[in-house]
Image 1 (cartoon, rainbow, N blue to C red):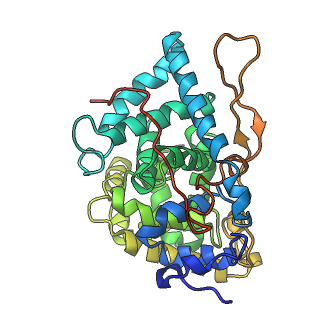
Image 2: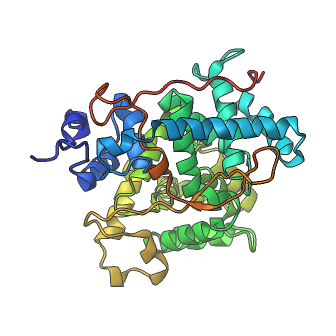
Image 3: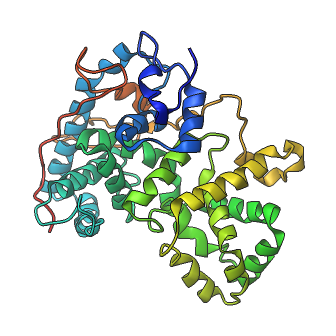
Length: 381
């Protein structure tokens, strides 16, 4: 049996008799090169985000339906308890969530209108995540990320676990641990590919600003630069992690190269910042993907020892390796407390906790079925 592209109907032939994925490397390569057919995204994303290990058999995935649902309900119950008890930290997070949720893509039909149940689901997801990861809590911009995932998944429960997986990948961005490193990697990659552009942008930047005009791009993975429908094909290529786990950096390089002439004509930091943060108007996501893939091909085709040491981490081998997910934050009940509390603990990966939610024999091995969670809060207005 050989691999067949997803766009050619290959999804149903991707599995062995036990429900294990047969061609993981080819699958991720296909997603990176061609994207995901819209009708498959809700299933494919769970594998890209490693909620489901590609090597897991169907029966293992089926074992976790009750655990996943109960765990999410427990997080929501704890949020209610924290709210009722007047937990000041939680209430500060909720105050920001209550402001941000009604602002989430309200011009899009999926989130438009009063008493929209999708806004209730989004609010539940964000509140539950503040309990799952209390150290991080809620940071503005998370609503845009969770809202995009909800738009694809359509259901609250799988959206929550996919959002949790995305936040594990992006967590350090929001607590400002790695964003300096990401900006530095971007600078050095541009310096390798286009030294003239690098010199100009560095000269144009405020002293010590470290290319902060690209900060928002990397913080939210370009979510503010593209509308709800356009960001989807960009993100799934990033999540495929084919050839690099830093495709966000290469995308940024591609965008800068697409506007090279205009950037070189700008000589003031504020003007450059305004220009780069208003590129959303007229950005063609498919042109950006194509330019980024070309830039990545340039990097991967170069001998490793020819690349500067500082950017070798950007390029990974293309021999079928996969990227291990980072440790997950667990939820625990603290003994001796009269209500549930949470703290960060090392637990098994989400993939071992939430595998699938399909009743046995109800769907093909790869498919899943979900029941929406009941609303815990009134709809934001």
